[in-house]
Image (cartoon, rainbow, N blue to C red):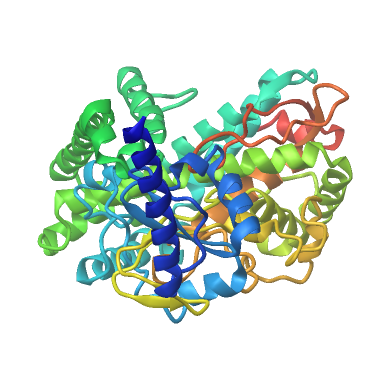
Length: 500
């Protein structure tokens, strides 16, 4: 009994001392108590962004937590986010050294995981100039248009009688085909798949990557990583990913060596980078190329497909918005051709819909985590070096202090808004030195996909009840349940769709 009493007294003394010590050091508010070893992990529930939002509502918009051995800063106000991405942008330009970055990010050398410095600047320049520039994105627009057209054709051919369709599957396969055709010139889903066995391998790798890339408890409790087997799974997955993308590179290298290069418009991104490797081998190693391609594959598929699924979920729950968008599409495009990317600037209401979806259902609700490389100050509080940062964009973008009736789906709130940011109240792609370089590509793809579906089909819920908008668990805030809806070709589009 005496031992238990002493342990209890030690625990009380430990928590009180640590709480007071934090105040003396001018650290942000910290929930009481922080337990030995696990810190505040006992307070965290799923989904993470809602759990952290609830804590911020109680303790303040700048909150310091202890996740195992890691110190974690939670920011959930526009002013604090502005501090992080302006005056403290360099201090927070690093990424935390997580297990996913070690094993899936080639030991922290990819665009996502590289620490701030010369290597990161080179990678961002490479992606901005050669991979994701407006010119390169435009050159590959035919792939996106073609894949959307194939999606429309498949829906029309198979869903003519108000049959139910699973849009989660449709969007996921659409985005993977788009990204893999841009990267390597091959489709891996649907009809016209050239190498079925390789397609199955690829599909398995993609599924495992999205499962494994989530926050790993071993990142906060090293003992869990050592005995739980999670790190071993990451190592094995990393080997399979590397082999798959290396085989794709070698295949392109052989094709280039045995024949003339295709015209620039038809080059895949691997072919572009291999051509640059010839003249600058030190800057375009195979590992650099593999890292860039795998970042594009992982970052460019799930985020866009999830956003499109949330968009259609919100739209079928608000049929008046569908009618308004269809009226705009009919006025701008008509019924004698399909929408293409050049129409997007002339569709302001569609732009409002995309903004409102990204406000309510950001694919990166906590953005990608940052880490401070030096001591800095946020909102007047001292933030020690080595502090992991989560900016809770879901909380900011759904907070009634910053948005009128934030729980309502109202695209009209963005009428007259030119971009996809609204100060630091709306920034689904992040901000500062580590903002998402694929923003332009994602916006084009989401607008084209949603606009094309609204132009060609009428959409309705399966039953009388509203679609359940519950969020699931995952880094990209997926829906808890796949979206299944009814799809029927619009009468004005039947003639055109029959010729697609």
